[in-house]
Length: 533
Image (cartoon, rainbow, N blue to C red):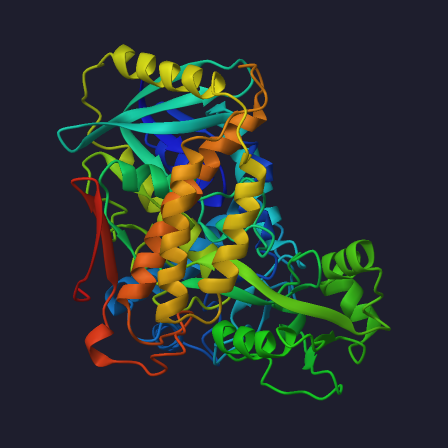
């Protein structure tokens, strides 16, 4: 059959898109590699920004904070659009049942996040992302939206610069399937997960959607900007929400002294922490001075995570923390309508680069962007439903042959898991919080070598049914491609701006006050910059 709207990804962006497309009376299908409630959005613990009460805040100030946080390479027009929609976004989430925490007046409560001049972050305890996802998923089920869980999308179906859907590997039964659609929405999340073992992202967040679009000829933008979250549990990189600092937590050095404003921008705090941890100095999050009842009410997840994974009681003990790759500001280049450079293909959420976050995202703006633009993507994708069904059996056969050849490879010296770990190590060492020309050139050479090795790697599990080895091979292909794009974009931006910090070019340069563009042309990756519209 042909779907009116096909959504790839089932986090908050994808689920929001699905609901809003369905409201327009079209048939909607959602494809996800895992399960909707396993998505990365559940890691967004702290809250979602909006100016709800203008007695001590304004939409204008929200716009200015976001633009300043972007280091002036975002679009004020696009930021204004999102911030002006923020109250409507919160009210919509509230209307469908998201259980926001309330204040004594029964209004939606708010807390302060880093980089913001006012208190404007709405929250649901410290489970905000999870509560939003569960509510959206419940609504999708109630609206009879079709889900295809545990399907790894391998290719977009593009003819004459127009998208007709995708090909996916059914992880459960091992078959390659074609999903034909009038319009397709990518909502697959970001690519910070390629920093394996040094990231807050789940193991399944492997840059798949961004890589799919890139291979299909879509322009990517700002790939060099990876946000490192300042506070994750030492040894496990499990996220400790910014809400912990928003509620008054301190950052302490090895001498138990505060060394930075805890609500500065994430890039500044993460670098200051990394300077210490790279010298094997401990850095701590201190919550001991905060009322215990307040901690239990507002930060129950942080209490549980610290105890379960670090055996620390944050009500009584200091919590050792380190920064880790958390969020990708770059991604698939889109406009305000969530359109990409390919017709009938839309993108929203963290996989998209809509000129909102620039070089550094403010905490609380990610959930706002995801839901705001997820709604727009769903509405726009539900228009122009007029394609004829096309058969892609030949493309299916080509993928089946590729899989068979992969499974028939002889045992090699390297395996997928070793290469994934190696990629994470390379990226943190040479394209992490600090970069320079030599490090990036070494990284480029290493990545080129890894690509050669990957073409020889064997799949240990020879079965086609629930073959996780095969899935991880495809994930590594995607991660490696986006790592190459990140490396080249980082080399091309010869300045320091926000999350992109180069030791050899420590200052901002006006000629680089532009978003970067990276594309594949004639099988070669090229980089450039474009003016902000």
